[in-house]
Image (cartoon, rainbow, N blue to C red; front, side, top):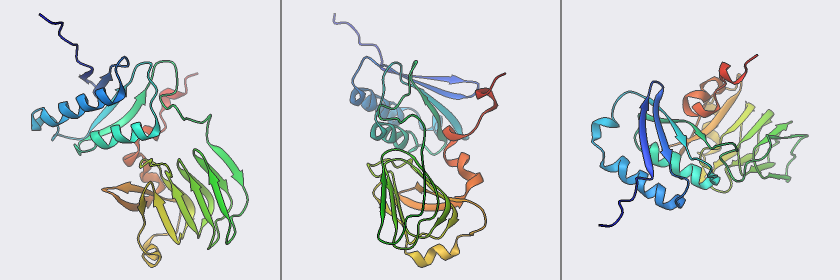
Length: 225
């Protein structure tokens, strides 16, 4: 008899939710297809309960932002499953991760284009006719009155945040925002952020961000004396 191949995807229940263990010795695509099969073929009642946090452990593997986006999108097809974090052993889980967010200061004026690889923190304004593009998320401590494009290489988990939110257009990954006149409905008091949901761009107050990106939420356990 031939040797039975061990499953490359293990799903365990924990007190905090579900733990997905992905075998790091097999190609990502093989693991992805096995996970997809398990999510599709398991009894429906397993994925239709209350909101459940998911921790994904990928071993010593590192993945690209595109692969991360595919994983998150696959798991989110079950609306009660919320990816809380992705972890690799002894290293950042992303191959193209930068050492922290890049901070720049200044005003992006009409006709200017500011481009950045990774996440960008801009201390300044983006004027009408100005454009900011990043492969990661964009955070503007100032007024956004021009165009902002986050997730420029397909990262649909990227967000766009600004202290004053009056963009002429927003883009996240390959999705383009609604017409500019509809942004007048957004409450300009306090910081707002834009994100993708159901292939559309939505806007909410900054304090709501952990509901949509629980992996970014600050935890006391990260700071131990």
